[in-house]
Image 1 (cartoon, helix red, strand yellow):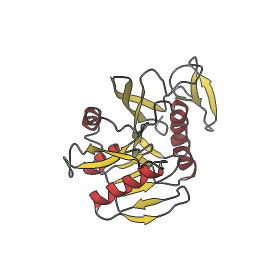
Image 2 (cartoon, rainbow, N blue to C red):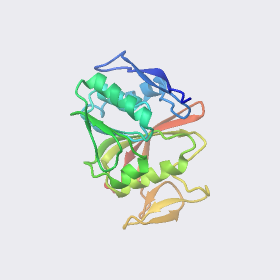
Image 3 (spheres, rainbow, N blue to C red):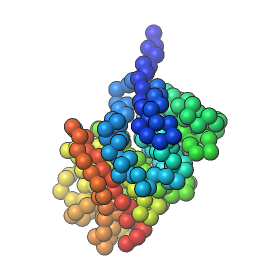
Length: 237
């Protein structure tokens, strides 16, 4: 007998929907960013989130994107590959926005959108490879802890496909013992040449002239997790 997925809840911390609780799936690997971490993150983002175009790539419960909308983001694109999680996120967007309608795109098997939010059910990397979108101001990357290589490829695709605006912000939450900017051999790091091909070099993820593609702005550790904000420098060096 198929067991129905159990649900839990998340709370919107501040903004238009402050204090609202929304159902989310209670499923292994689907870990919403904690209230404490979200509060710290959005304190960092306070000058930037209002009016921003955001991408919540490994959306899961949608906690980061929904918090952004509550705090005045102009638009949030959610991307989640789990059909049940994407369905519940669609419902939550509709509950908060009151204007969700169904749609479909070439990168999704199902989607829902309103004037300020769109939920697409798709693999994150496939979405990045296929989507044609106005560059985002803020990108949230919170993949499963075992998804280090996926995180690295996502960062490269975001740069290579021009999906983030100059001086845009990337939020990364991952295992504190992993470095998303180094190669798997942990000795050299990825370097992007002028033609966007990949090379190996020492230091952080860098452009051919040695400048970082993503420059660290703020970071903290909480338990086994490390979370930080990075400023995109790929088009401003």
